[in-house]
Length: 137
Length: 137
DNA sequence: TACAAAAACGCAACAATGTTGCATTTAAAT
DNA sequence: ATTTAAATGCAACATTGTTGCGTTTTTGTA
Ligand SMILES: [Mn+2]
Ligand SMILES: [Mn+2]
Ligand SMILES: [Zn+2]
Ligand SMILES: [Zn+2]
Image 1 (cartoon, rainbow over the protein chains, first blue to last red):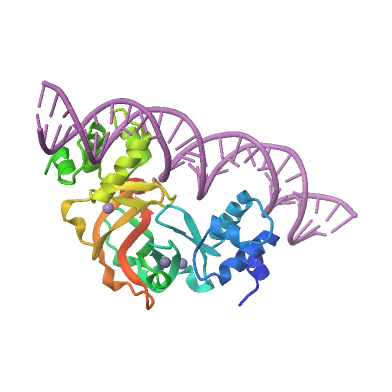
Image 2 (cartoon, chains in turn blue, cyan, yellow, orange):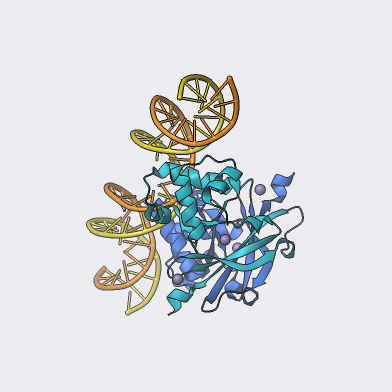
């Protein structure tokens, strides 16, 4: 388990207060977090545009992956180092009640999906929708 | 192949100019269309809120299904009558270049996805991203 | 055809998410 | 300490989508 500063440095990103804070929240979060979720979770001061840009940087660097929830809002989750494999994409569970997004262990091989001739496959997104454990009680 | 008017009647929806036009466009479209796409495609006069409400009605009725594209914007595609099967969900191809959404023949069994204990599965969304035939040329 | 009720519509106002440009500040290398 | 590229803050904007409310239209029935 590396510290936030090391992760930033490894990806050639400058070490700022907001970035460390965002990274820390996301590493310890068990769910995907939206811009709004993060705004609430962060204690440091920041501009909303900077947070958008931070999330983009992290996504570009491969530190985070983005999940679009059923309302069309982006949620971000930390990508463990070994998740760079593009041929197996882990699925996400989306609760229809609380709208939370969970990363699942289960992953799917891209090659199993059949597409028409001439189409080139790149990545796969699998979303299971249903009711999460919390909301089921 | 039923006419637009019959489809509306069958679902208990009133027969209006916009609705017939929207249905007609979507039935003949080979791709998922956004609110904006439809605005451009429609020749009749309409209010943008009414179009949003029309799409919601159609979705609720099961006439259309919604696909959220990678930007978070909703696209709608016509649901053939037999597509009510919730245990097999057909996948969608999303082109990373032109951003168009195609319904695929290929479908996936919901039961194949493993979720943690306590989670209740409901529906499955599969999106393959890549480059479409057009953009590949 | 006339009438009534429910549904659909049009308009205005609003909210949320996300983007762009530009001047200023800061991190980090020399 | 100096320099430079990167990151930030702020204002302004775009797009998508929603809500409330008064008016019009569809459709079933008398
Ligand atoms: Mn994930
Ligand atoms: Mn489809
Ligand atoms: Zn839930
Ligand atoms: Zn394309």
